[in-house]
Image (cartoon, rainbow, N blue to C red):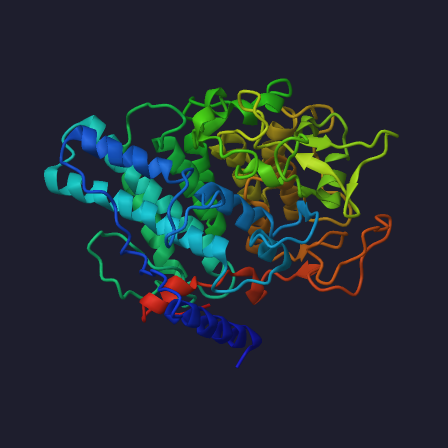
Length: 509
């Protein structure tokens, strides 16, 4: 028995004991048995349910009888993604389950992972509800076709993100035999359902997105899915599959749509605080002041503090700051907020330098508020750059990278050759990190390209780190979690215990 299987069995036994304990029974349900409010067959009813599906990305949701500030799809999405990479440093030990992402000490009973699985399938179930009604009654006008397309997109989006956390990467091993996730494409599907393979899940996602593209032809705001959002997701999907031509094809469809433009060096610093009104945004989840999750429950709360709100416990890492510091004209530095002592030195928290991250702050001047961007035009250029690099088309790869750089204050520092000691893929991944940091990409980018996640810097991702005064001029050695190989089994989150207990056909990681 492997160590991971041993831990799996221990955690399942422990969780079963909790469920059966005499103090009360915890409700668990397989991923298709998630209730949604019944809706009528009117257009208003379908629109209302669709709006409710969008709201599930940001709303507090009752999970097993509990409503918690942390129970938000987006908060968990970004934490599960970014805290497993090398761009954010953990500033202290914490009982918050986000700590397991930093330390790769996952379990089937992990609260953040359990909620993410639950809410993902709740969104899928809401999308299925709308799709089935429109399939039955007929999408006989552009408005209904648009709504149907949006729900195909949402269903594909949540299944793709589930793959990201609970399955091996498409490029790791054999996608035709590696297990993916449970495909939920019907509200009446069987509760006992096995996981599809990675290949089958990707095929399902692609099919949904192709339908979405065909159906969506109504121009709405950036807070709604669109034909271009589906094309952008297809570009991302094919990039992760290693299909370079399709990656470029769908990125070009977005770029050539004429609907979007890259922010310039002058407009980029205000992009994330004004995501819904900027020209680079393809799709963002709209937050209003009434959606503010308070001082300590927002996405920003772990990454920023103004002294009155926010925990401010996770900071920009040394390697990421060093990457940006290669050129101090890089306007992407504007999203790193340094905290200083009275004597001008950088403030430390538990020995770690405090460099706050503000990509999720300052909408309407509120330090806790933003409308997180899920797709933007810059990613399309970077997807093309990576695809061209893998096609060994150096000229086009550089052209895509330089399109980004000249709009980020680096018009005098364009890339024209591969530096000594690096590969073209390394150069692309560096630029993806500069541009897409803290947006959920880094760990996936490295894993997809068979790169080791290197975290050879001080922080509480290091198992056993206790000293409050850390010599940041040294490099930590002899600790666990400093380097995570791309094929390490710890990268993959466990299937949550709720699904395992309720669904006998679902196999654990």
